[in-house]
Length: 575
Image (cartoon, rainbow, N blue to C red; front, side, top):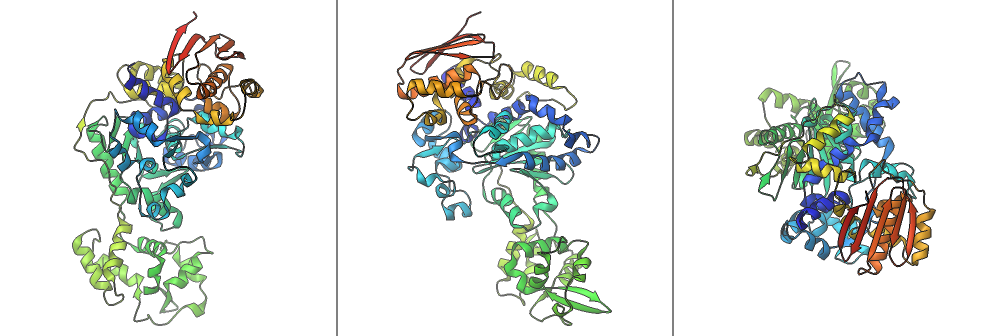
């Protein structure tokens, strides 16, 4: 590998958010690594999914939502993966993308995000204000094994992961456990967030641990408002799919052009809703400042009775029924008689009459003519009807800012696997794709299978981008570092010939002897970058020769010799 290749392939090991921004193939490589994971395939036999294995993919996907919410926490703690700095990362990425372009689109390099983040200060929001202005967090995207291993980390009782990790997990789990075709799922990355769009029924968006259906997307609640924030306010930097990716800055796109155009239409349909009773009630729930202009009506004992909107929404707080739903009459039945009025106040709009007017007039609020008619209707009830109609239109239709289609779409030898295949068949298929598809090749590095990968990228990532293990040993001498490592469980979080990097060893306080030797090398090199080292692993015995000789026990069965000197990593076989 040349230096550029080593940079990309080593990034498949460290998998930080900023690396995924620069090397967009990494996003789907992680998905494929999770699909290969034996942990995920065990989910198929979990009682939660076993009892609904004959249900539709949609039903299983909705059950998956609760399972993931039960099993995983959302984690964006700065201390989990440690810190880097702007100059180091900008120098790394300079051969691939300009510093200006990174600053415009990546949250860690100056991008301010939407108005919410701009107002509160993005560095303060993420806790970065306690560091100097050049400090950057290594928000590393976790593999499924690393997500599960959080249960070993102090302060956690279950798995955890950040938004990109959860997005990758959802795609893999929906495929393996729910039988959702990879072709029907799209990953959407913005500077501050990662979501998925799943093309089933009316569509669904995964948002951190949640699955948001179209009905939920427009329900006007505070939690959905947060889910919408990235889609409403941020430019989409990457769309990733089994056929490839498209990136906002790169001229070439590997995603199928037809697939991308289909995705844009499907997403636009999901992000658009017609104006009916339910939608309007949801809007008033979302923009409650406008409730004072409206009343709801009920035909009661032969007469029309009216209730002020803000009063009816108070009843909603203690009622499972939502205003605007088909069961609204049940809520009206709970309303106190004294809250009804026999006449409609002249200064208020009756919502039911409004909706009848819109239907009868055939008004389409998504057109300029429709918006003008609505404005005229509201003019006599509110001073700034134009602003009201504008906010109503924005609520009913989100215009996602996607990468432009004016790219060079190139054939990427798309990934074609199905959930009918066994795990072994999928792994064999991906091995056969490695020479033709970079994403498939990178997936084995994200999977950390060092029996089929070159070691230099793994060593580069492990010995240059693992600050947590260094910080964990602050104040320890060499002997104390060795004793600290030996006191840990001698068990890797990865099975067979897969390896954890040093910060995973430090965070989860466990590791195979080979992983511990590499961790110790990382700490010693941070203190003396010119130190010459050799790591020899001969099946079950690992020896690190550095400032002294350190021996560990391994179950990985490798026979390798690793020579380390001034950022050069030479690996030879002992076979």
